[in-house]
Image (tube, rainbow, N blue to C red; front, top):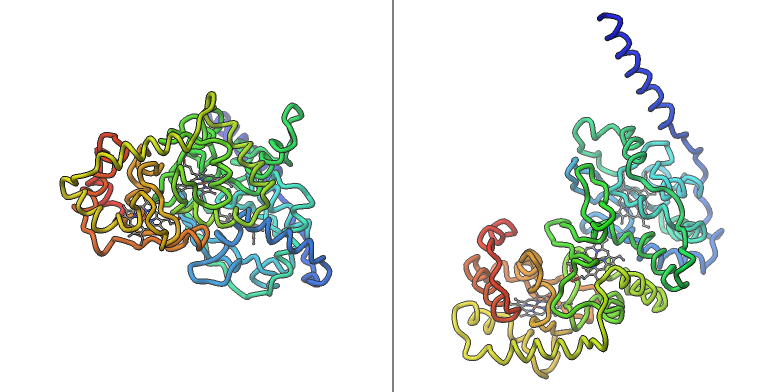
Length: 426
Ligand code: HEC
Ligand code: HEC
Ligand code: HEC
């Protein structure tokens, strides 16, 4: 008996030892910060565009802080961690990181010191990025002004604070390696796949995650999720907006952060969309082409315009006379900007709520959040701002308004859990 337990303990110890040996990553020697003039102007400009696509500054900037100096809290189910300073500061940033160290972090999720990084940093997508793009990104980051900014300490409970455990996580879930083009697909599709699956890291938000925080695959890929209290809509066969997506409307949404047939990016998608507006037409067309292969295919001569006009006629044709408090609140608070017809566009776009994806969504969260918080950071300033109604409408009024929009605009039964949701989101 004693021998047996000794054997078990010995076996466990051996496993841990093997695990540690396999998971050990060397430290990469520090360098002197490279001279910004050693990078070409083209490489830096390209890196800037790639950084916008990869949302580096969206995550690596604290509220009100200098872009790329890090410190933003990322709240995960496993605890809170903080993004790091990506400026070339010697002590607190990437100053002493060689290109090799940067490349290893992006491709393998290991820091220069040899520590495992957590997948809140989307290296699981960035691993697909090719060498040339990584070089341009590096050139861009290393030519920023160095800013001293410490990264706050993580707040992760045991065992999640043990970075070594990521070796096991990577073994189970991390599909490492550059993008592999699919020869049976054309160049545009492959380009789109490279951008969406790589720097774009679209599935980091648009795919649900399993209990250990890994993106689910197969039929769950792009099936939608929840991020920071927002519903992330599905981008696969589960997508059921009033006007089905087409490659052309997807392109439009990616180009402008807004589609006349779907509405505006309002929450966590707005900064992502702002980064997309900086990409070339060809690249956004390629992304739309790739994404369209996940969506249900539209048959025949489907016209989004025709469908939208039908919906608007049905909706606006039946609204008068307005009955109930929801309708009166809409007339007083929303109609000035969201009226149909051809009144002047004095305030950016006027999303037509009769086609808004948010009114047709399975959950009311995004509609309620837009009403409570407004849109203060549109993807493009030209789209206009929407005021927040947090302080001018009480919960009862918001519930009446949401019920009215859902029933009279979308023609669907009201969401069942509005009371609970409004209270929670407020
Ligand atoms: C979704 C949020 C997010 C995005 C987008 C993001 N990062 Fe990060 N990044 C993080 C987090 C969180 C960490 C810290 C991870 C940790 O502590 O394990 C990190 C760490 C890093 C590190 C390691 C730094 C160090 O000191 O160890 C590098 C390098 C890095 N990111 C580069 C980038 C670049 C380049 C981009 C844009 C292409 C980018 N990140 C985009 C969240 C993000
Ligand atoms: C001052 C003008 C203004 C008022 C008043 C206003 N909105 Fe908006 N709303 C906008 C603009 C502009 C956008 C698009 C912003 C963008 O794209 O960045 C928008 C976007 C939206 C969106 C998200 C986009 C979409 O298509 O789903 C919803 C939902 C919405 N508004 C609902 C309402 C409701 C409900 C009210 C009344 C409580 C209201 N708005 C009042 C200007 C306004
Ligand atoms: C930080 C999380 C996040 C990332 C990364 C992200 N999205 Fe989104 N996306 C959202 C959220 C949340 C919404 C809906 C609410 C909103 O407007 O923010 C959304 C909405 C969308 C929509 C509208 C879908 C619909 O049916 O209404 C499209 C299309 C979209 N995203 C495409 C993309 C693409 C392409 C990428 C990669 C380049 C991407 N998203 C990356 C969070 C994200």
